[in-house]
Amino acid sequence: MAYKQKMLEKLTGKDAVSARRLSRETGVSQETLSKWLREARSLPVMADKRKPRT
Image (tube, rainbow, N blue to C red; front, side, top):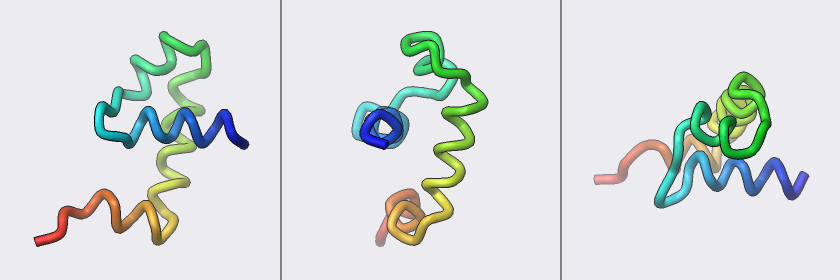
């Protein structure tokens, strides 16, 4: 679980990279990384992060 969280941080953090790039760097499939990102964004906490506050 810690590894998955680390990958999600790389996909969503300040210097976020694309799932395709992270896949090339880590060997984790792009499909898996994209799935993890979709799942995380469906959670209320992540949903709030992707919407800019005004």
